[in-house]
Length: 192
Image (cartoon, one colour):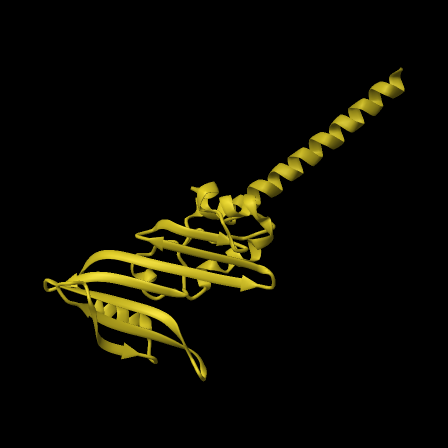
């Protein structure tokens, strides 16, 4: 009988020590900013030029968590989200009473993709007239200079990432999700 009591105590101690070590590791990984399996950025370390002006995340963390719970196979793609260039982005703003649009995107051409930044001026009917096109240079500095003393109207951003058979497409207007496709399946309803 004494042997059974010692055996139960040993098992209880082993379980307690395992639980304490596991809790310590879990809490340590949370303090370092994320899960030990997938490190998703919660800060805006984004390479996205226009979006850096407002220091916002491209995809809110709650949406990332939902996507991971529904489709864990795209975790590597989500980890790249904050450093990926957008498929396209538009920033509509007013400057001195006139409406402008700053658009950054990849232009498909015969010699491959060319990253472009285009400044449009909209007329009274909303028709956009090209004012200037940049294909080289520091788009971040150009954007910052153009956006001085402006009033933001709205911002549109779309990110498209593909790796093997997995893909994520996310579009937001004014940081509000409008489209979310994971492996070409809409997840907008399940994640919002």
